[in-house]
Length: 380
Image (cartoon, rainbow, N blue to C red; front, side, top):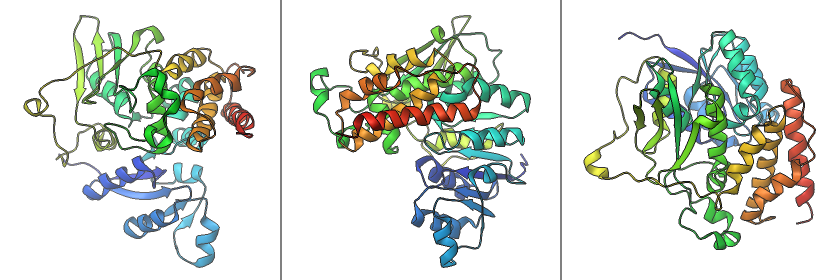
């Protein structure tokens, strides 16, 4: 099958998902052209990426330093500009936090297809994001393994969905007694049993905040009511999600834990990659798959996050900002692991939500909650 070469722009190229996206581009040079790269402060990695892929433009926080030293020849622009760069077909949103919110909206307005791994953008603006993508005939392609699995299960279906079942590994503390959780350290929390991820998402996995975020993502990406979305613990992390249909049939997407799989699915959409450099699922090797109910006592962040998100308005934005700051406080050893959920609740209890907010108002709510958490932990 002849495919036209896709021009891609990567927001967050030096992070885990961004680097793996470049791995896909490296493996399929006949299919992808890296036009733009955007990063934060990881100077050395970005320099190496620029040297290898020779993008037309970059966005980075340290552009003045690089320009002064004459180290790069590429055009240096803002994150929104590389998201809307002329000739780009697909924008890979691989940043963490709320920095990609406005660039993603601007890219959609310009008709760019979006491959999105950034949870916060969907958490803060899921309803508006999906509506804008639909009105601009833009494909919104989830990279995160669980929503990607749902997306794959739904392809070719007429959306007679009874239930979405999102799987969770249980994180590093699945077998840790609740009474021991106050003593766990940041190092412990970063030891995910099945995935290699960045620090923020690793802690969110340990608290199960990331699963609440994935429920919120599924609510908006697939237009499924809250009550029809379920989370179940699946320690092997091989079934990434399931969809139960109205006729009683259930479809699942299976693959070994590897972010390359959902990244390739998004980048090659509507096709699949012509060849694979990842190991396909082998039932003879795996033997058995197990499931457990979610322990609400062990993961209070899950229920709290959904309660806040269902309020709508700018509540999800405040949740996102508060979680980001609370995770930072834990990683800096300013609070205990078990204080993350109470700190989030305390910080945003007096939030004054705005109905039908603009992106600027969403960002303001997120920054307000982040600053409030920082104030509460400044003396720790």
